[in-house]
Amino acid sequence: MAKRVLFGWELGEGNGHLRPYLSLLRELAGRGWEVGVAQRNTAVAATELAATGWPVFQAPVCQNEFSGISASPANHTEVCLGAGFAHAETLLGLVGGWRALFRSFQPDLVIANFAPVLMLASHAAAVPALRLGTGFNCPPHRGGRPPLAQPWSPGIDERLDRAETHALRTANAVLRTLGRPPLAELGAALEGGGTLLATIPAIDPFPGRPGTHEYIGPMPASRLPAVEGALPEVFASLRMDHPHTEAALQALRGCGRRVWAYVPDSTPAWCARISTPDLLVSPQPFDLPTALGACRAVVTYGGHSLVLAALLAGRPLLLLPGSGEQQLTAMKVTELGAGLAAGRDERPARVATALKRILEEAAFTEAARRIEADQPPDVGSRALARAVAACEAAVMPSAVPLKVVR
Image 1: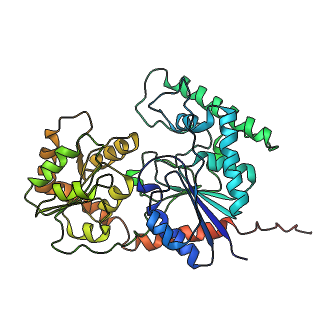
Image 2 (image 1 turned 60 degrees about the vertical axis):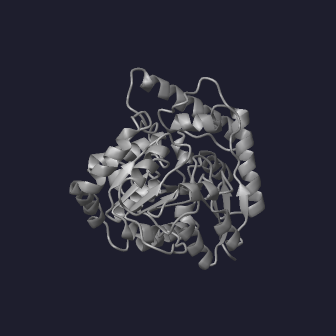
Image 3 (image 1 turned 180 degrees about the vertical axis):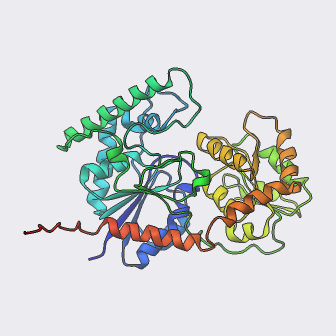
């Protein structure tokens, strides 16, 4: 009988919570697994998923807002509070939504990307679960609270201890209602049977991980149709809602290089109006291996998947971070010497200055190429093979220990 795997994504925006893992789901499907996908945003990769015929579900997502929770979470426990762990009835409803999906799809394995409620629901239903994602969205949580995601400040330790106690109490109230034993610590449910990190240690914001966390690196990217015409010297991935997007496009127009710019939240009409003979702007994604194979530098707001792909191709980056995860990633890249960052609060003029430096100063490219050289050339196929093996191992029956008779 075919095994069934449910991939679930609860928190975060953009393509990076699903697209980087489609190669794993396709490989499992090719091995006879039945695949289902539950997404926070069902518009992501909708065309690609429709072509597979896999069932796609709307992931249960917290719609409530809670008072007393910081708008800038200091660690992932505070993220969990905002995702439903602040209120037992809310969390019970979300877990119930996931359990209804389980009854419908009947998964043998859950793969969770930034999905803490899904992990709790899997624990409550005794469905094997693996976490798969970046260093940021798979924080270490066993043996204590997860690490800080922002600089330390006075009083933060007491605040986070209260958050951990409250989230654990809420989770245990839900488990009690479902007739399940309580947790001694939140991480026992939120980390599941193991964590696969589709990243490299050099850009992990939370180093020093336990043995249950394994760096596997990025899996192969999906290939897209090639664009006709000249290849890019600069590749950009931007968003309309970023305050520096206009400054970045101006800098790209004036850099004297051929540019491909992917702006997913734009319209075809706007892209046609903005494009020039040397600046091709598109709301549709470009084939990333083609773009990275040709370009000299990458400009992006700092999504993990593109940053990692650029570094493994030896391409330096100009980063325009917005979210906390993007800021942590930008900090790692700049510490490595492989790029520069222009934060939201910096003057727009810094974007053009930083781009000029990235293109003209060889040290940034040299640093990126050192990172590329540290990775095996077949890192994608290795990551895919390791992830498949972990999935298959997770659903294997536990070995029965033999009693030794003396």
